[in-house]
Length: 629
Image 1 (tube, one colour):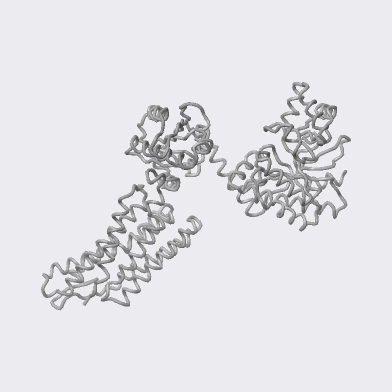
Image 2 (cartoon, rainbow, N blue to C red; image 1 turned 45 degrees about the horizontal axis):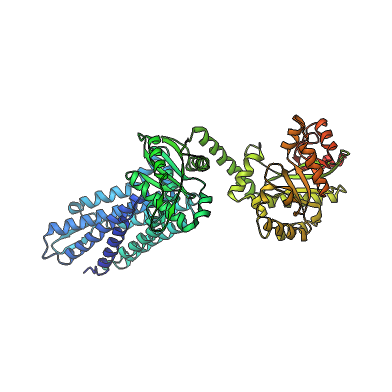
């Protein structure tokens, strides 16, 4: 006699989950469709399991053909359930994308054999049979466990094989998911007359729902539009087979708007924009991609310019609700995605760059994203890969450029970071430094260069070669670290280098929060470090602010030096004279010939740096240069 008391509550929970799932917007992603198939098939399996068990218990009073068909449909559902659960694992790991066609046929063979065995069992008694004494297992009944265990174990193998392609959280979730499937099969073997297996399957479904399928995980702005996670997954799954136009709508000067109206009112305004876009594009996919940016996937025949004009007219009106009243303007970007083979990072990167430009524009101008924009982002993606490899493997190279005094003697130097591609070619710093800053990895790279600089200074001392100082760059991202003084002082102590020999260069961009900057410089100064203002002339610093900052040297940006060389005027000489009277040392960057050097000397510059003396060279070559000196 079969006991199915556990099946009823299991079925009710699945139905509640299904209703809640359909109450929220969903993306037509493959794993979402597989999840729905998983729930639907498991629901049918439970229904047929209950019905077949009840018929088997009462076989004497139920027509034989009903008992046979209920058991046949149950086993068909069982094999289908095993295969769909396996397909979900393939979808999460993205293995289905790389598997060869013949491998897909091989992996689906156990499923199709199970269906065939189930269909012919009423005649050949393979999986089961029903006679005058009721239901009986067939000669191939153990095949259901062979299929169940083989799919679960194959899933675990594929998950481990592709573990680097999936996030850690998803990896552990899928390992748990398949282990529970194995436990459910073991429970079925151990308690064949108690229908407990589906309770464990329900646990698996809940795990999948919470980890991958919870609609709230993919929704933004009070569930009105999809979020950036959903955007990435949608592009990733459809890359290469899309036929869309994409419209980007970005709120002008979003950060300023957020400061003016506050977070609460701004979020209420974004919610109103999301609802408006849902009404305007009710058949299309709408995403919110952070920082006041909306992305809409529309049909390839859509008139994008007309749509942007319509949205622009709405933005000319006030956004008003019980919670907020905002006056906003918007910029637009558009891109055509038709059979493109670009990666999700290349597409999103290009779109983000152009949307940033649109967000700082005036009026309702539409910016078109070209193949060149995507190619530029593709290049950035490659450089980011080289950058991460160099940082992770500590292969960021130390290059050094000398600084000379008025007599032409090398008295100091500047440490510079260089990375190479996988073929050994140097990547220009103007290409990888911004990427390091935007990704936050500039901290690791800067610390590596600082440590290699200290090691180099120690090596020079051991060889009886000396520099009066060496400059090390600090990006604005590094400069805001509150533990900067302790970390750098610790590295200097490790290599027994006097911090006074290390001059830290910061740009005018770092001189934003004067109080924080003074505190940071004071903290570093207490450890012995000194500061130099780099690239003066490219920012917005003024003399009154410089008077309060303890810089020991100001480096004139090469643009000032080159500009004076082309068109001499009184501005630069007077500026240098003022700096000298304030007690600053002056370094002229970008010196390329004797004429430029003489001009800067005549104006009173103390130190000089540029290709006239040497381009940045590896530390080993700089050592040889000092040795010859």
